[in-house]
Amino acid sequence: MLSRDVTFEEFVQRDGSRLRAGLVAAYGPEVGADAAAEALAYGFEHWDRLGAMDNPAGYLYRVGQTEARKHFRPTGYLPAVPSPGMPDFEPGLAPALEALTEPQRVGVVLVHALGWTLRDAAALLDVDVSTLRTHIARAMTKLRTALEVTPDAV
Image (tube, rainbow, N blue to C red; front, side, top):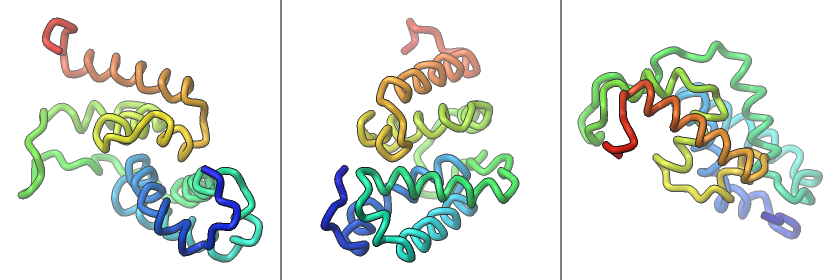
């Protein structure tokens, strides 16, 4: 994800929604969206320096994490009851996702729920693909245990 010679506006068009999705997956819709806005504001102010980085989205993800951690992580931010327009899902899934560590939850949501590639999710999170793969594998084990899913049922 080289960003050299990319304007801030081009960066936001290409990576802004991905940055927001990652932070919302980590901190919930309200705190995550606010953190993404703060991270992008920081990016706008410092684009002369950030634009030369290999992975400005990863850097701004960390800026967003710092902003989000100023707030208490909400409990129960995933909907317990499906709202109109949302697909049906296992009722125990939301509490099981909330019980995961942040890197595990974000990895599962980005890769399995939003369909990102491991490479794209790892780049946003600024971790190696192997690290992300480990987080997701551990998360899936915990989710299967929490939801009482056996390998035969998968």
